[in-house]
Image 1 (cartoon, rainbow over the protein chains, first blue to last red):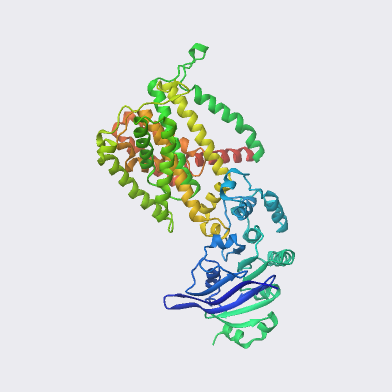
Image 2: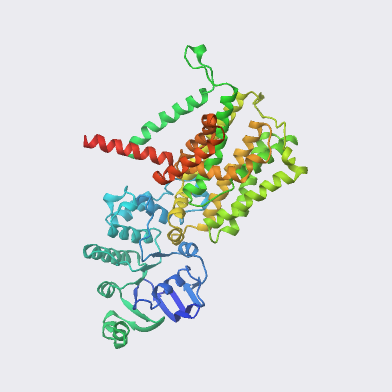
Length: 247
Length: 330
């Protein structure tokens, strides 16, 4: 199985604060990798460096063997890297379907062709499929801003999959989602992973969610990787327990 | 209301509006209708309204749809007006001058937008503010080119298929036709995937960028297209008034363009037409108050912002929703 994401010696400092320090890891095709760690351990900074939202102080990122360090998020997205955000990030004034079409349109043909071509960039069928897949059918025409928190979270995830990405980075997908919705989200993510062989990296605080969703877990503390392994290994690792429980 | 039932009355309504606009200045008493039409001045005001609405549409694209700022639309109007005046006086055909006016404003929009792009919004406002002042100084001080405070006079109105647009009624119809074309073009842009991308960068640029929307490029495009509408409006303004000087292209009129879009309803398609109507007609209606009309306008704008940030279109939609609720509960 090929390596989709390679992170090498990645560091990011804000002045004297070393948020991420020499982090290296690989993610293989089809894998669901979890990244956990206490608050302030550098998870979100690591994500933002991989995704081009922040420029790393040091180190490289490669996607499918291609160096992508320093690319802007939109360029990275068009290479097949997609993400969800920790806080809700849908477009409240657009309908659910419009949100999904937007999520796919920049991958369709040239910009000039899109100006003169179809209004939906030929994506209505794809959007409807995604709406059905995430069971949002009754809400397709609703403005995204009127959806419940959990429904917006599902839409947010659906948008990340709209362009058929190779690699999806999910930033706390379970945060603030109730138990029923959580089960449905996990089941949908696993289904899409199996169906498309898309590779996931998940940051999550909800241990139950992460342990049952992911095949491998990295533990971050104070900007460094302190442990790596299967959910079972991580549960038993004394270093992890110490990082979480403190001194 | 469903989208389909909305569309059913839209086409007849548009046809009706078009007919009314075409006939507005025409004397219909000969046909047995008690409508005397508009005189020269009334038709001039109607034409000025259309020209103002074109420039306001551009501001609406930048501010209402893409969520950026511009305080230089009057300066872009000036770029178009002076370009057209100078080119037609040099013997170029109006059609060519009109296109160059739009292209020049578009190109300046791109150049102005690039330095402001990293930060957007308020910084774009500052850059445009500086540009508006700069252009006013150029119009006023570069006498060899612009005629300075004396301006440029005797700007000819064009001919179309051998018919002179010199009579005020002809020129009104000419401007109405171009307004219709430009309105259609903007409607097309807004309903295309580009329009969706503009909305996305207004609502959430970070998320838009993560979905592959090149936020910098779209910001630049929105700003340049909106500015080009200022240039087109200027190209019509010059032959309308037949004499241009720097005053209508100063900083204050640029603010006025922003205000009329806000009053009309930023981000609604007909908002700029309503805002422009108010900006053009209000000074006429409030003429009896003499110097106080700006004061009254300012108070209206403040009340508007406090109680109805969606502008007049927003106010109308709120009233409709309220009436419907009452009918349902009754």
